[in-house]
Image (cartoon, rainbow, N blue to C red; front, side, top):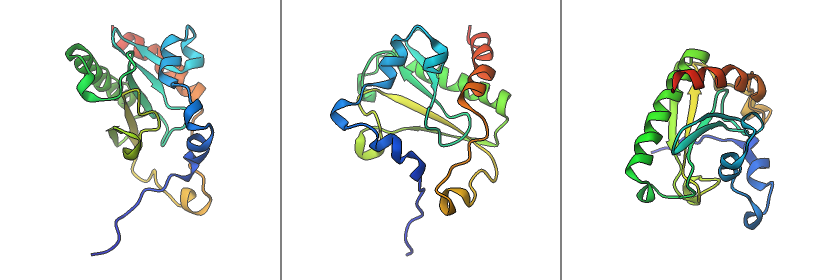
Length: 167
């Protein structure tokens, strides 16, 4: 039995180590409270959840869907929140499929710091578009992940279509 495969993401190190743990603010609560969706990169606001771009994406189009309430576990989700979380996730996958035309998606919840949650106190689901061949030598050889589109450009492509699609 060989060693397990590992996904290395060294480009995320500045995010992880950038601020002492005790002084990190909740990016989801800040985005929820923001009156400027563009600066907060909020693509869609629902009644109980919202979707925003990940500022440290694993791939182009990496979105997150978060509850408005600052809760960290699935067991604290109210039924209406759970339903809307999945509905908005499904719609964001449809939106990204339409705009970016990826070959697939990774969807995930990291529950707890040990499971990879950078912000374990605020439940959020990751949507990561994937393309055939999107993993290449750059992250390994140059410690660089190639993201072919700026967050600002992507935001302007997604925001108008998200609002139309989810009404």
